[in-house]
Length: 389
Figure (cartoon, rainbow, N blue to C red):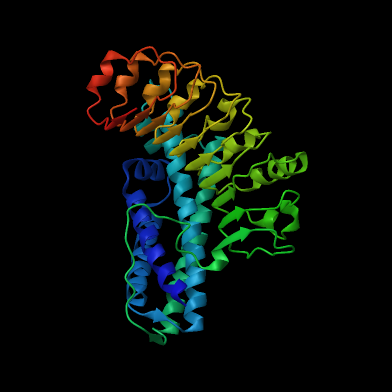
């Protein structure tokens, strides 16, 4: 039952992320701007603090009470739902800030709200109903814990490393994390959130019952292989992706036909398109405002980046190595949080934009095996640049 301890530790870390998000200016302004009541936000914060205190109590010892284990699994699922909801609000606030024209007062727009006839407003206002359902479920779980009591526990306290970055793949019970490795007929658990797919050359996703019904997946990793996906598999993934609207991590190595629906995965933080056949990168990335890592390594058909890449304000890691990129657009200065830029083996790249000196958070720049003639003189002003190759 060590998973109970690890699961509780993860939830504590996730709750801290939620507290930070609820305290952000963008979140508060957008929340109030849509006329979602302060009382709902107060209830959510109070309930989260209560849950955090309960988790602190139960992490002291290893849980062996089966009912408490079921309760913890249900709580984990409910906190995931709350995280998805808060991330939706944070995304809408960020999207409005980025897409609104400069003449508009963004904060005033948030606080005044949108016209009631606006489709966007109707969609956002539906969040009130969703939030109330989430609160009812969380509060019910708190009451259940009071009925269950502390339960039987044994063992000493297990120390768990803490970090500000929640590693979702490292701390889950099996019900929340699955690997598909040719286990014919494997049925995915209803609460599966993290899925990696490893198969023999002629395997396919449809052999695994429940894959297409797991709309709550946060991680989908198609493991790197030495062969390309066949046409049937490309079609299967093309059909699957539009249903996975809550994905945070997506890896599609050697995928031949990338659907534009990737651009609707608004929660994505990590996107790996290694050796993918890219036709329209703009359609894929233009609205992925939460994206932190974008890997385009060995995408041979990629010859340019769209101007929309400059809107990815949270992007920290960009890997363009071994692509056919000829130049970087001037809009890269919009990548204000970019820390790592990998251009290795970009043989067609001969010059960098002079305004790259505006990337003040850039730490690592790899230009090995390119045909760059010179570096922009202003690069010496990048005080945080630790490594240039």
